[in-house]
Length: 126
Image (cartoon, rainbow, N blue to C red; front, top):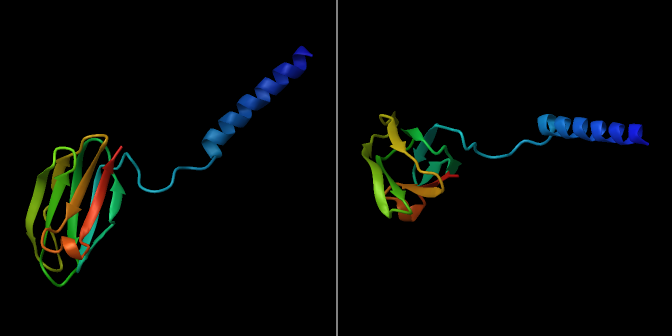
């Protein structure tokens, strides 16, 4: 009887270890990402929702559109703009923006001119 219990416990341990290594992986953005590239076009920011690390992160903005865009990053907890880029020429990439993100917060990223037409995105920091 003892032998059966030992075998069952060993099999359960092996099954648990195999599942943790070979089982399903989380989907979507990663919470360890420290860099993100956003593509701007007329009335859209892609990706429009991303999860980033609780750390200093590098944000790159590429304007693939035909008009100039600006970007503001708004901290929804402090209720203030924490960073902005005033002007990104069409068909160009802005100088990377480095910002410090705090865990447990959400940040709105948007073009202040075209926000009402859908040019906004969300940064989630777990």
